Image (cartoon, rainbow, N blue to C red; front, top):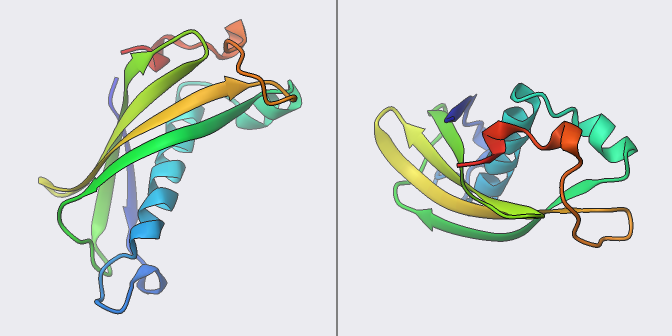
Length: 130
């Protein structure tokens, strides 16, 4: 399953070169992942109340073409690897057909003590598997 999330670049997200500041891409990726999880039926609030967290442990990001103010960006998110307590999402930021940025985001499920644990069955959705 490829999930799509769209946003519009705002002026305050730009750097001195009138390009999106690279740190803002991390916010875009996070918003798209949360939207993906919500769309597959994972209630993030219920996940937290149940004592679980999803931690990002690694992001490998490649910047290809800068985004600029008022650009409409689509972020495609899909799982490329799944393990017992973790997984990897591939996220691609696009302006039309142009690939702006690609990222592989590794996540792990942890309990309240911060120890890796399998996702509880009610949150272990088929869409999290490649």
